[in-house]
Length: 111
Length: 116
Image (cartoon, rainbow over the protein chains, first blue to last red):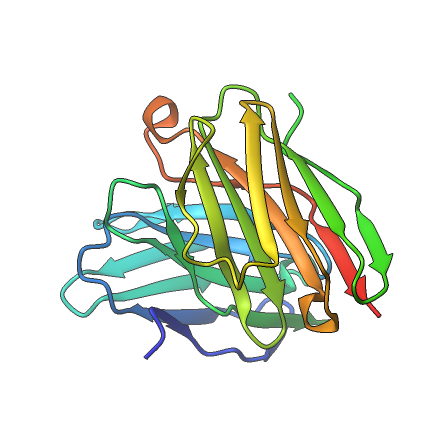
């Protein structure tokens, strides 16, 4: 079983749609959670951290369920510019600042 | 403020040649990571350093791979001899978890390596 599992997609949605991505992780000791965004042929960039209480940044909402070891990302009012691969990321629960990256979910927003 | 800098951006070489990838982390960051990304395997951690000291190299594929960090502002990843299966994008990332109070890592633009 992979440490961080995501549906690879692609998710093809029209502009303005709401889309949700899910991710599960296997390491119960993980303490930090993130969503990164990676554009084609570019480096991963931090989209947002994920907190236990859930958090929102504009059109993006992230949720964490520690009991189920499940993380989600909701994107409202999708824009063409949201087309990218979204990587679910968790730390390894040790003091070494190591992160484990999921395989990514590809989103394509179409006009 | 400059981000993580990597060079070269693209490298095409022939099987058996030595390849050296370079990275300059963000100034003040005390952690440096080397990753490899392929379609088949995704993003894999190869090795990471803390305060210039290698901490975990369990992700290094085999003895052909080596990494050094001679000072806080420079690291290299060397492949000798290179093989076609080493073709991938190699990313360097840095972080400063104590100063930033987060595990967030900042990635360089990557080196796209093709071994013929």
